[in-house]
Image 1 (spheres, rainbow, N blue to C red):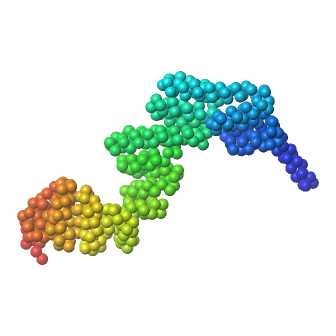
Image 2 (cartoon, one colour):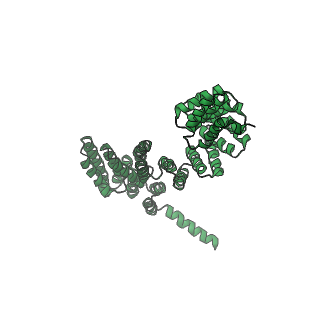
Image 3 (cartoon, rainbow, N blue to C red):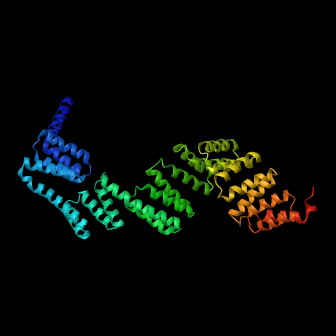
Length: 430
């Protein structure tokens, strides 16, 4: 009994698969649901049963209109007419689409943009599933430099047919303009306008991960950690191997004091990009702060070998050695860092500190003066310069430098202590 039932089902299934009308209906259902690949298979199966089945030829013509392939759609419409003259009207519609596109192109060339849009609108009215109508509207608005409207039409074309390569290229071009405009506003310090540009890019292309990334960077700058993390995680949803996002997320977590999470993210950035110098530097810094000095040293030695021009790598290594009171190695690495980057006052400050610990007063004074030359109001430079002069037993000059250092509240207490030491030497005698 079960065998008989199976044979009946198999017979019905086989009969259905051999019925071009049934295959046509199946394909039309698939086409309506957006399943273009299976719809094409169903229509072709119908033609395999009956090569002259005109409705399947017309259906394939319509399917290729969904893909924006007017040339192939026209070829199938001609075959449908050859199989059955009743399909002449469909073939005429395809010809009408071609005519509207030609008229629209001609109008664009003559700068008659609104007239061109009317031609393309006429296509959309009859064939709303034809993505090229929206694509050509996008091109027209782009020629007018109406970037926002161009983006909207390119986006509409992709909603109709997500694999439309020309529409994708057009939308990418437009959203990159929004991104670039946002970056320019960001550099000018207009963060509100930058945010609007990034959000505008995402409005038209929710998969544009670079806009999410820049938005996350901007939110980080504004101290909006929660929003920044949310934006950056959206980048990873779209592009999980984006190393810069892993690094930036690490820096957000570090700012929030979540150092273990920061280490996890910096490590992931390095895993994706083994040459990511900044990630090594930040990772080395955190391990130094955790007093895991061996790990920190291994990481920082690795980065300066990978990138011998990475000044911050040498600086971090120098700071690590200062933490370990290995001032000779500290000075050696900090000197390299200033040779590679002579525009960072902080590197000279740390170098001066290392030299003072080594009692190399002249070298310390020179490094401290370089620090002051770069940032005159930075108290750390004046403090180290004063210490160098004290080392050379020039107390008058040292006091003058400590007076400058006390103007910086971060170094005020240290500077005042040194001034008191000069004014009351007996108080500090052992």
